[in-house]
Structures are given as C-alpha cells and as structure tokens.
Image 1 (cartoon, rainbow, N blue to C red):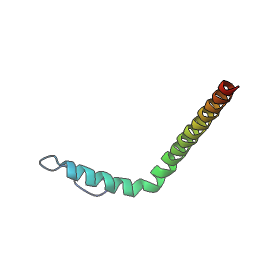
Image 2: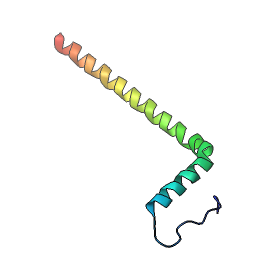
Image 3: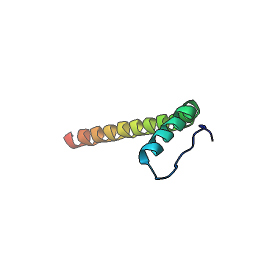
Length: 67
C-alpha cells in the first residue's frame, strides 16, 4: 500500500521482491540513512581507534625488545 503496487500475484518472484525492495528503499532513503549512517560512522571510528591502539602497542613492544 505504501508504493501503490500489488505484489506477489500468482507465482513467487525473487526479481519482483528485489525490485519492490529497491522502490521501498528509494522512498524512505533519506530517513533510513539518517538512522543508519551515524551507527556506521561510529563503528568506523571505533575500528580506526582500535587499529591505532594495536599499532601503538606493537610499536611499544618492538621498542622494548630492541632495548
């Protein structure tokens, strides 16, 4: 009803499902991205910080081993 389409008449079609899914996404894209994007950004920041911490730790261990 949101897209004014009749879906799944007769046999099931994964192509119709995929097309309908994309139509629905396009309709709510702005709202969806506002909800999801901050979580993605936060996850990327956490991942980057973790990589930095491990890099620092590896460097410290390497320096200690050289002493």
